[in-house]
Amino acid sequence: MATVKRESHLKLNPFGVAQAQLRRVAETFAIDDGLVRVLERCKKAVIVSVPTRMDDGSIRVFDGYRVQHNMARGPSKGGIRYHPDVTLDEVQALAMWMTWKCALTGIPFGGAKGGIACEPKAMSRGELERMTRRYASEIVREIGPQIDIPAPDVNTTGETMAWIFDTYSMNVGYPVLSVVTGKPLTIGGSLGREEATSRGALFTIREALKKLDRRFEDLTCVVQGFGNVGSFLAVFLHEHGSKVVGISDSTVALHNPKGIDIPAALAWKREHRTLRGLPGADEIDPAELLELECDVLAPCALEQVIDGDNAARIKASIICEGANGPVTPDADAILEDAGVLILPDILANAGGVVVSYFEWVQGLQEYFWKEHEVNERLDEIITRAFDETWQVSQARKLPMRVAAYGLAVQRVADATTTRGIYP
Ligand code: GLU
Image (cartoon, rainbow, N blue to C red; front, top):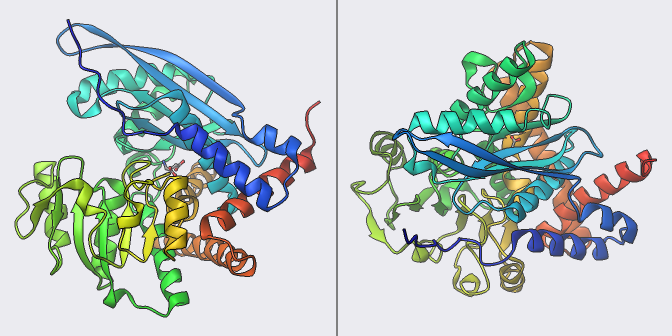
């Protein structure tokens, strides 16, 4: 049977991009060459085959990955992604970015990521559960509360984490709460975790507005992606009085220059599982969405959506990277010249892993916090990381991305030097 090979959303090799970013930062911050050689590689990469019985009785075998980039500062941490374009190189890049994210926010983790190349939207719940449980069994010796702690990422949810928690616990013979984060509240999840990534993004925008002497009430915003990150960010911006003029999901992009009714969009998406058909907004070409007239553009879906081709047409003055790696280095250079303020991924979307850290701590202590405690501690960490990044960026006249990566890479390099290279 002839199969049509779909085109990946990744035009550049994402691991190549991540390594190039590291080299630029290492040069700017004079980081030792030997350490750069350590940091540009991943500590461990595991590829597993994931045989899964489908509902029609047939067997399909998916490729699964778990990559641990670095553990100099603690056990590794990072999500699991289900997407047809998942490759080893993508997972390696995402794992490296997790290392920088944890270092920038000062939480005691290294970086990891996992993924399965599959089409989750075309799979039933039962198929997803069987695939997830087999994948979790295949990596059961690679993960654990003191080793490597998965969490949700693109197309995975609390339910996915519940299956991994259960599979791991059945394998070892007792419940291990802190083996994954992003769990449902009924099995040791943390209050505030679901909205945490978006809340963190909101805090970074708030801090940027303070520096620029601007107000939420005067902003027009475009949010690309309506999954966990994009949907809650759109809600928060709306609640803060900003006008959200453009939104999209994987099926449709919508525009209304007068502002979209975001609570209605959220309700529509929950009911119909798509934004298509939402009243009060016009369908536009998804490529046009990023180029709409607005103050804040928040790409909250996949990598490389702003590249050398469309960067010059971006009209926003602030880009808030809710996704990992949405802006390519080519685009960075163009946007830098145009004076666009980019709030980089490892800062802007770090809220998720910060509250994952809180969930891990709560699970280990079996003592759970109130929601306002979670949100206040998140605010403290994100605001501090923003201030430190802003300071370096101002003092050294560097873009926020280079400042953030610089701080993070230096911290991991220092940890490595302090520990020494084994043996
Ligand atoms: N997948 C999220 C990220 O990219 C969360 C990771 C986590 O909580 O461990 O940051």
